[in-house]
Every structure is written in structure tokens, then in C-alpha cells.
Image 1: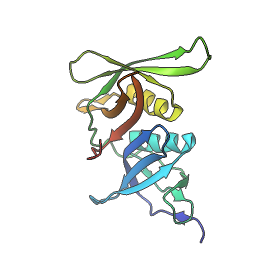
Image 2: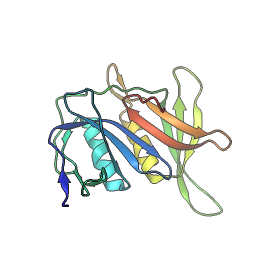
Image 3: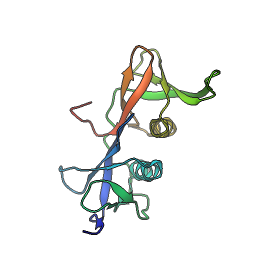
Amino acid sequence: MGDVIMEKGFSVTAIETVVGEDSKFELAKNSPDRLQLTSTSAVVQAAMLAAFLVDGAVNPETEGNTGMIKRVPAFESGPGQNHQYAGKYRVNRIATQRNPDTGAEYLEVFLVDGNDAELFCKVDDPLLSQLLVAAFVFRDTSPGHKLLLYARIQNNNRNLIGVRLGEPSPTW
């Protein structure tokens, strides 16, 4: 069976990335039903993240009958931000750091829950880093539209291992 082209006009309602797993994208079109697609590609994630942030209508192509995104064709900015930005944290500050022993670079993020003190987290994963930098850049996109996120953190070493942007999920 050949490649499947999804119906046009889907809005990206949520993006979820966890270390060691495929990125997950929830899509909707004039319905409460959600379609979930996946990808391991940083390029696909960047395009789907852009669609989420600008409310673009996407038409992702998948590999056969799988839910794995192969290609994201051209799309434009949408009419406005219709997203439900649910979450506990906002990204207050970001920094980069290099391990002096290995030379490996990583992202440092400082999350805030309401008016609480900052929570420092280390991010080694490039896909998570991409989502967190976008959450930082777009954190105050317009009045009443704070870009909040859910986060999974390993408390012993403050490694941030998962992020969800967009609509809430019962598993987060």
C-alpha cells in the first residue's frame, strides 16, 4: 500500500515529547475527536511546532497506513491562536551549559509554577530542547494566551525528560 495523505485542514492541538520515545502530535478538525501522529524527526517536529504556534492548518503525509509522519507539506499561518494552553509551568529563563569532562552541551531551563520560585532543570535531548526554546520565545504571545506546559522531571538530578504543549491530557 502506498503513502497516505491526510485530509486537509488539521490544526495541531498538542505536542508531546518524552526522552527515548517518538514525538506525538494531536490534530483536530472541527470536532472533539483527536488524531494522533508520531515522528522521530527533528525537522518534522520543527514544522509541526511551527504549525502549532501559528495556528496553521497542516496536511501531514504518513508512511503507508502508519501514524508516522513522513512529510509536512507547505502551510500558512492561521487566523489566530485558538489553542488551549494548558499546563503547570512556564519557561521563565533558559541557558546553555557544557560539561567540562565530556564537552557535551545541554540546555538549562528555569520553570515557574504561578508565583513560585524557579525550578532548575537540565535538558539533554535535542527534541525537548527545541520545544522548550519555543515555549520560552512564545511564552507571552498575546494577552490571555500564556504558553504553559506540562513537564516530567527526574527529581534526583533535575533532568527534564518530557514536555507536553497544548491541550491537557489525562496522562500528564
